[in-house]
Image (cartoon, rainbow, N blue to C red; front, side):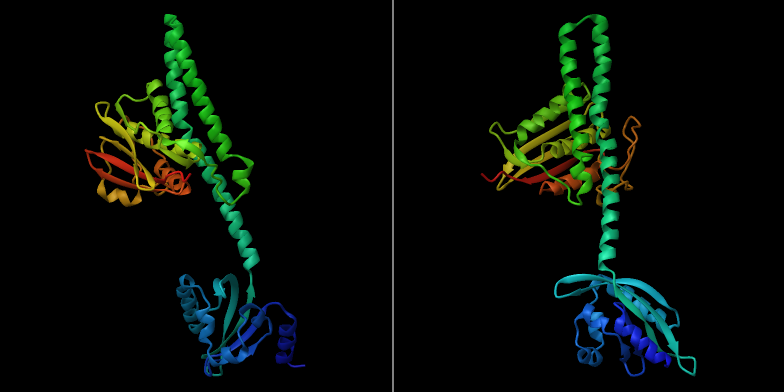
Amino acid sequence: MNQSDVIQQIGQQSSKVLFQYNLTQNKFDFLSPAFFDIWEIEESQLQENPQLLFDSVIEDDRPAVERCWQKLLNGDHIDEIVRIELQGQKRYIRYIAYPIYDSDKQVASLAGMAENVTQQQNFINYLTEFGQRKNSALEMVSHDLRGPLAVVKSVASLLRKEIQEDEQQEIAHYTEIIEKACVQCTDLIQDLLSEEHLQSMEVNVHKTHVDVSEQIRNVAEFYQKGQMVQQQFILQLPEEPLMLELDQIKFSQILNNLISNSIKFTPYTGKITIRAYKDGEEAVIEHSDTGIGIPEHMLPQIYERRSIASRKGLKGEESRGLGLSIVHQLVKLLGGTISVQSREQEGTTFMLRLPLYAA
């Protein structure tokens, strides 16, 4: 039995595609049956037009395929994974190929194998996404707890002072703030580290019928009562309810991050303003301050994690470069959009647009 017969018998039984492509004739000298199970192309069509193989490759992967083709022609072997799309279905194909030389030591053919690794690659992608989700959850917990816990620390200091001065009414007031801060921290931890959040690849959004104006007042009051805001804090909210379907915890995270940023980058003599109003089928929330602003060259990167836009606060507060990326992610999850306008030494305005509640 010669070598060709052995290869053909292996090819007949293997789920992997074995092939040999003749560069001189631009056709396959050998192609095992498994090929047709993956590509679902008739052999006659393929032999007449080998370009069909390249056409099945997803456009983003085509430059990589072209580079591999050049490597083979230059005498190198390749081992790559490429995505193809057939009848609306995407598949991952691993292909290994080697150059075959003629008697003049010129590359005359390409030979190798290909296999459908979609199931394995999807599993790898799932594990990668799963790991990223856990890392993201832990980052968000560590970042977003700092705001409420800073309020707790501030109020605890005030409480100690009032105890020394025996002001019972103020003690009760400060105790209420501490309780609210602890509830907020607990809710955030449960939301981000819940079984459902960690086990699912989807981010869970638990929407309820919410008056945005009331939600903004509650968050602003939290900062004001805790004496965390030295700047003038202005709320311009409609008297009538502005109803949306929102995940209250995620919306509070958005407000906490925007307010914390403004406190960090606005002088004590400045202003922080939150305005809300209806615009067509959307609610608009404008959060602005008269702080140091964002340099123009940094604006395109402000929503990136740990971007160059990360800066220390006016009192030297460290920045991990997560706050605005968290805000951007959460606004998208709530079905909204966010935009920013800023001038150095004049201030910054973030505009959130969220769909109104459809009764």
